Length: 356
Image (tube, rainbow, N blue to C red; front, top):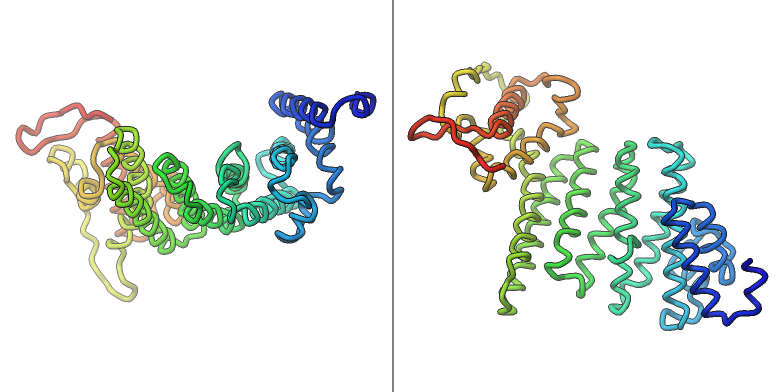
């Protein structure tokens, strides 16, 4: 059908319907058809090379944008590149939750291509939408990284997540509160990669840096003198909580660890007796009370701390270190109280419902 009508129709009309068909096939999860009968069919008029073979920014521009980013067909070309990357990702994802080595390498190559594209458009503020919008660039990069992280390849995707964070921080149009939830998501993904590699120090350092960036953004908003909406306040609160959880994930364990070579007798706490005493009952609960407002945030912090890859008590049992064992038991006790919705207050020591 394409061959029959291409010569009979105006190029712009033909290409628009070509993309409509490709987008429909993509939405229908017919990824191979969408790739070969849509996006790649359009791109082959510029370059017959695969996306994975693009080496650098200059090679990218020469291959797909020889007339520059201001040409009439530039937006369609970006749209085709977006579609092809999506199709390649979903085709690999269809093969299984655990990609083989060739699948991992292909996805890493696509991540490399997306990074080259972001490098190419970053200096042009009029193209900042590509860095965020339409599941392309940073969003598409995040989706691929998440998939590879779930398959145990966090160390290989860390550099791409860091690059996505850098792009958001250096693009002026994206330095607004409306993009704050997305920035917090990327920041947390970087922290999770560090935790996965047992680099908890780097994770905490990066989380504190991210909190500083959010604080700087809040101060800039205050300097403008504009009235802050309730939605913006909520966005700042949620972003701060998410990153504070990343800080808590390490800080709840480290102060309790015993220095090497130091003998310290284990002081076993009776958690059954603590159940009838008011919050905060343990050092862990004191940290929770100091760092978080509201039981929902505290419960999220407990869950994340119990999923720390260096401890993982829910998967592997209690760790060998006695001090860390105490922290784990205190976390479980705190989580149980929060989840049940009953805490004991110091005045009446009676159960009170808490809004989770």
